[in-house]
Amino acid sequence: MRDCSHAVTDGMPVYPGDPAVSVEPAATMEADGFRVHRLALSTHAGTHLDAPSHLEPDGRTLGEYDIEAFRWDARVVHCDPGRDGSIREGDVPAADGADAVVFATGWSEHWGADEYREHPALTPDAAARCAREGYHVGVDCPSVDPAGSAAFPAHHELLGAGRLILENLTNLAGLPERVTMHAYPLAVDADGAPARVVVD
Image 1 (tube, one colour):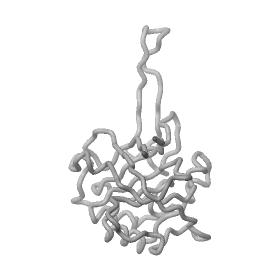
Image 2 (cartoon, helix red, strand yellow):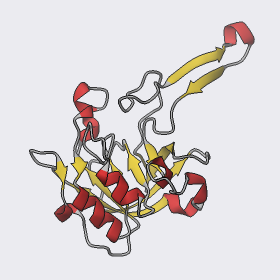
Image 3 (cartoon, one colour):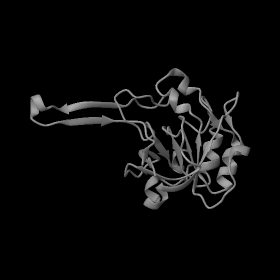
Image 4 (cartoon, helix red, strand yellow):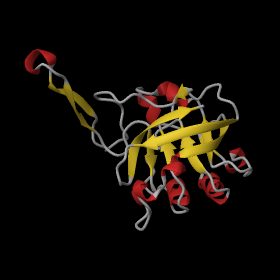
């Protein structure tokens, strides 16, 4: 099995404007005889799932999906987004019974660096094709839309079709073209949640 999740750590990178992540002691062995940590983070911290309610007024929350919806028969597309950083419609494989497509661009290597924010993204046409093919979508960067996008066209194409989006994946290099991906979010009925993502 392979872990494709970023660890949740104090001060970890977050999407610009999102709440900071805090992991700090609330009780210590020295003072209390046991350990407890206080965890503060947003629903879109680290490796996480976006539910349609993230951007769609009447979209479903994570709690409205059966647990089976988070186990994907996934196509892995190892791609080079090119000079403009775009994942294009032609990069989207034709439907063949898979639940999801995961775009492995290698961008997770920049995790923690300023350049991580200037990341590859899906064109609206690519996102629309993913939705037509019935795919949930995973990416190894912070968003399916370009940095600074205010309209979020790729998000709307996918979430508007009831598809889930998995962002901030890592450790995708060398994966075969077809995998089983387990992307189980925290059990919170919300617009998204951090997820532990494992591939077998």
